[in-house]
Amino acid sequence: MDAPNTPIETRTLPYGSAAIAEAARLILAGEPVAVPTETVYGLAADATDSAAVARIYAAKGRPSFNPLIVHVPDLATAETLAIFDSAARALAAAFWPGPLTLVLPLRPDSPIAGLVTAGLTTVAIRVPAHRAMQALLTATGKPLAAPSANASGAISPTRAAHVLASLGGRIALIINDGATPAGLESTIILPGDPPRLLRPGPIEAAAIEALLGQPLASAGDTIIAPGQLASHYAPAKPLRLNAVSAAKDEWLIGFDAVGGDDSLSPAGDLIEAATQLFAALHRADASAKSRIAIAPVPNEGLGVAINDRLTRAATR
Image 1 (cartoon, helix red, strand yellow):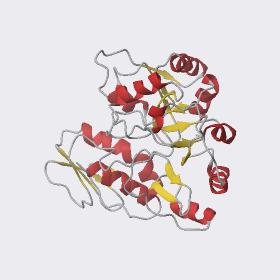
Image 2 (tube, helix red, strand yellow):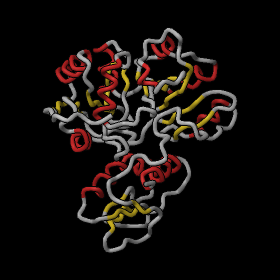
Image 3 (cartoon, helix red, strand yellow):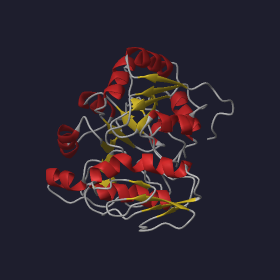
Image 4 (cartoon, one colour):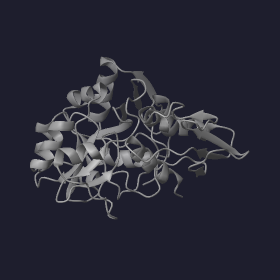
């Protein structure tokens, strides 16, 4: 689906009652709005309104086969939309509200629009912890589909300025509540036997395995959740991974002992690196250099999620 042809005015309002009221008005009128979550900024629309969801796809230029995550205020609401087994309830009790998305069977009477699930019989759903998204859920009284608020395949936004740079002229409103605390999209789990890790994220696989008492299997090849496209989160410039030095035409993003033009974390802190990842890629994309290089990041803990994003960003 193509992006809108006629640019519109994109306003940015600071978080507060006026911003939430205006955002709710737009959403109930069928328009998408950018709002921060604890992971990244999301482009939220009424998940029960097919036309509103189509406007998300149009603004992002998002492939229609890539499902969207539905955000709800609490577990009780989630259970009206999806079927929970004991494992799903245990995960929700442990990690909601928070950056965990569960892919669950869609209830036959669920009002969720087919465009949200990309025609699948499952739905990706989570309860966010961020005050802005929770306030918007309360103000609209609707489940909100909210993929990352950027053009499809581009770098995910962790600040309002990133949203404006990517979607300015395509959406009417951005709620600005500062930088997102996690800086990475949610962990996505498909409960079952075995449970599957569909996307690494802020909640580490080890914590989920400890709760469930069994290891997580890999995602497999079928796209049933957001973030499973091979090429995703991509800057406009070519990206080289595991670099310890830069060529003349490269902007080097360092980590730990590897310095550069920028750094995910000079101290080698993976939490800091996760929160800085997309902001650093945005700065690199805006630099005068024609290519980007990034230092090695340990493939452990949060490093698994960081490397997942970097591998997809480097795939062309």
